[in-house]
Amino acid sequence: MLARVMETGAFGLRFVSELVAGCLAAYPFDEQTVDGGPRLMLSHRDTGADAGFLRLWSGHGVIDRMIHLRLRGDPADTQLMFVFGRSDSVMPHFHAQTVQFGEDACIYNADLIPRLDPVDHPDYYASVFAPITKAYWQATQTAGNACASAPGNPAIAAYLSPYSIGASRPTDQAELERVGKQIRLYLDHYLELPRTLAYPTPDHELLIARDQRHLGCFFSEELDQRAWKGVRRLVSDPVYSEIRTHLMTPLAAH
Image 1 (cartoon, rainbow, N blue to C red):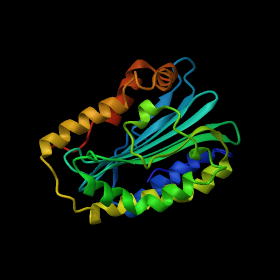
Image 2 (image 1 turned 90 degrees about the vertical axis):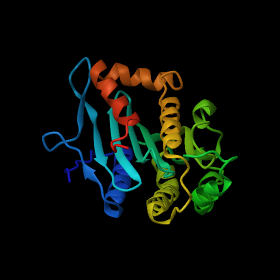
Image 3 (image 1 turned 135 degrees about the vertical axis):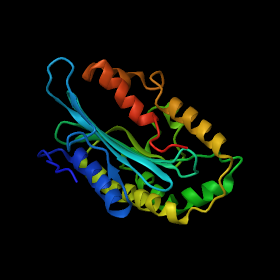
Image 4 (image 1 turned 30 degrees about the horizontal axis):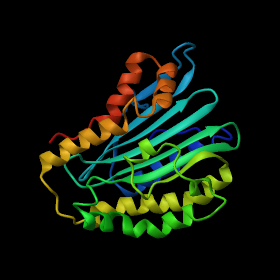
């Protein structure tokens, strides 16, 4: 396992790194390294300074891969974490994000991204989401929490689940730690699903095609232009393309 150095005050990095560590402790993953380091080391396009990394793990069974992407810009330090279910399975994708501004300001979000539609597969939603209902309400019904507000971009929210937890306006480390308890419950439940989710799998080819379309929409450059323009300004064009490829391309052959 790669050694990690946590910068003083980098609480967003610490939070997501702890989620990653929880996955590694609970489920078999194999890290895809380059020369013993992250899959990608990122450098600022203009200065060559450290701009973060992309770490990639291959999964087993119904989990395809896990990604931790760190983007160090000015003033934001962004952590993106995804655990992707196999594209030919009904295993949801887990997503968590923090964006830290300065010493004590951040936004965050977390979700289990469904693989089927609720109208045609209501029992799937009961299996995947009913167990996290209490955690969802505990996070979003606390009036002082920023995640109690409406999502900042409903166009993106359309590709998430109704159980998404997210602070669309700046909050602080204390709230992240408070809501982090519920996010960890989301992840604990997610890591149980490979063992407990017994929902019958529809046609595999249809699932693969839907997953490709879904991820294509969710990671569309047009859907979140400001964020993707920020990434493109940060790193070189080839690295930008490689980041997007890792996010949207399964590792497992079907």
